[in-house]
Each structure stands twice: as structure tokens, then as C-alpha cells.
Image 1 (cartoon, rainbow, N blue to C red):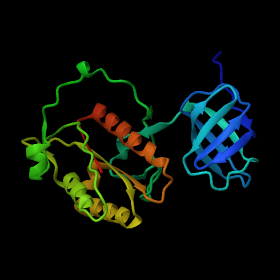
Image 2: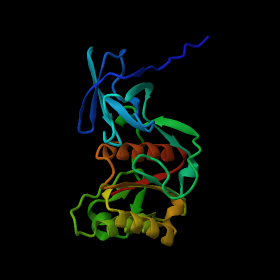
Image 3: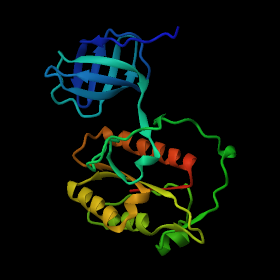
Image 4: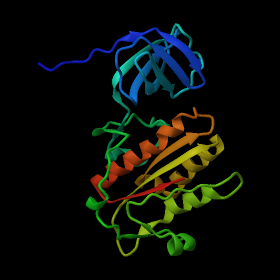
Length: 250
């Protein structure tokens, strides 16, 4: 008979500092283990173990610690954060935490993949060779993309980085081939106005049908931006293992 771990609730929060809470007198827990925090009003928040010792567990709360006091209860869930993935994710727009924000139904996952991932042996990887033409000469000529590659775009306020990211997602293709391939698009720290622009442009141009879009807003919890790129990469790895995949991020 399989052994089932029963999680316990602890009401031993000793300190709250920024996005962190400190929990005393717990059983041994693992680094990165998921945590559920129940507030005094019954609402729930999510977090993960950031550090642990014999006496104190440090928990990082994704949604911030607003509303949490020492009467809140903490439950350690015994697993790390996983991304529910499916080919049905194509055409969907998700938050930076991986929740649908396009009005569609929840993702019906085929698998739940650990977002931490596993170490990759570089010698075991196939040599990249499929050139992706973006139509942007500085990228195609000086920073050439190949299938399966990540493209980070870093910029400052007032510069046309959003237009550039949308242009790449809209017109990139593998030259000489008519194969379908997917785009996993991740935008971090954007305004609500930029979010609406991304959503409208993806839908207007038809690029959304072959894309999975993650949008993290500037007013979302800062700790969420640690998770968002991992969710995007995990999704891209799943798509790549399912069929040919291209990954672009902003």
C-alpha cells in the first residue's frame, strides 16, 4: 500500500517582512516546496520555501503579504511548482502566474511539468540548424535565430521594444518550409495598456493561433516575475518535445 503524505497546518508565523513570512516549529520541508497560506478571512495565497533551517522556514509569497498576520495558517504541500501543459494551450493568453486571462476555460493539462527543469547535457542536444527569418535585418544578419532558440529583448521606457517583439512574433518563419511551429511569448513588467495592445495585436494579426502568451503586469507581485520566465521555458520545452517549436520572449 502506497504511503500518502498528510500535510499539516501551522499557525507559527513569527515575522512578516516584505514578500516573506517566517514560520517556526515545522517538520522538515524541502527548498522550493509549494506553500498555501490561509488568511484570517478565509482567502488563500500561494508561496514557496525560500530557505529552511532547523528552527525557521522562510516562505516567499507570490501575491505579496498584504492581509497576512500571525493568525494566518501555513500548509506545506510537499511538491514544487508545476506547469500544466497541453497542445490546447496554443491560442491562449495567460497571466505571469500561468492562469488564463483571455476569458477562456482553464487549461486541461496533458502533463504537469516541474518548472525548475533538469540539467541538460549539451553534448546530447541536436545541433541547431533551421534558420528563422524574422524580416528584421539586424537580427537576421547579426544575431541570427534558429529553431528552438530564446530571444530576450531588454529595453527602456519609451523605446519601441513592444513593436519589435510583436513584429518578430507575427512574421518570423523557417525559410523554405511550410511547417507549423509554435511561439511562446513572455512579456514581463508591462502596463495594463501594453497588455491590451499585445492581446489585440495577437488576435488581429492571427499570430495568436500558433502562440502561447504569458503577460506579467508591472503591478503584479514582484516575486511573480521570478516564476514567469520559468513557466514560459517549461511550456516551450513541452512544445519542442511535441513538435517543432520556436521561442521568443520580451
